[in-house]
Length: 77
Figure 1 (cartoon, rainbow, N blue to C red):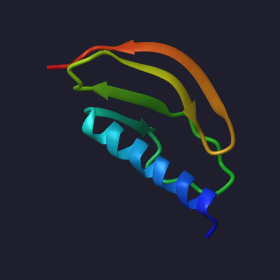
Figure 2: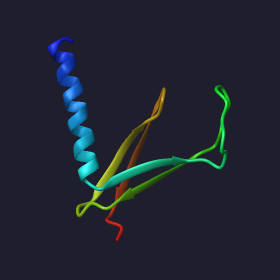
Figure 3: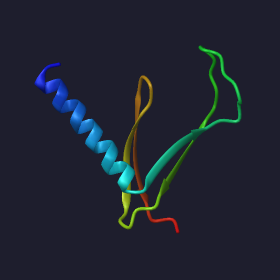
Figure 4: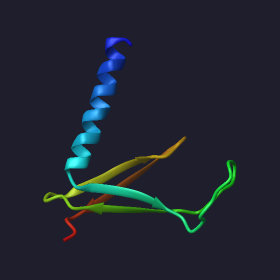
């Protein structure tokens, strides 16, 4: 593994650790219990923030695309 690849991997790991410690969580939910490869299903993205500070969701990366947001989240008690 090249140093630049290792550096990118370590930065991505640190980003995930910081996000986990921040109390921020996202989950994708659908009403369909099972799926077959190639099928399309509607889903909902639930986002929860338990962080003391405001969290801003700027971008979500899906499997083959990304979607930009500018959504502010405050702490949920």
